[in-house]
Length: 117
Image 1 (cartoon, rainbow, N blue to C red):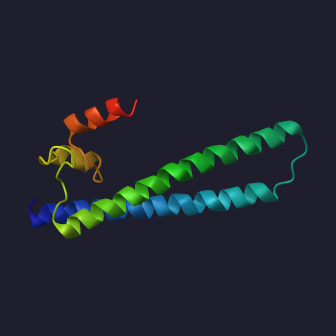
Image 2 (tube, one colour):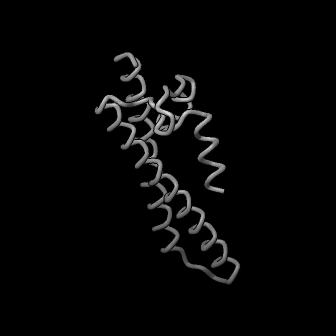
């Protein structure tokens, strides 16, 4: 992959990482505010608990994406970014534009998904 393309993807990864970190921080602040809220009945408690569970699930998913981003950035440094970890073929530029932290090409990703079901 060309140096210019690597910088493009590194910038995409950095921007996404920054956005995720902001999202996580905002969610944590929201959760702290929810804890301070005076709840008057069971319906309020259920609503707050539901919000808390949803935000926790989102944070968990975003934390996993942060790890994948860091992994992809290490691959850029090591010179093996954009190479499928299963078939060792190049991952398409279009796929990387959509998911710059992709580990697999489209064909191998489908195989992995079928195996995980």
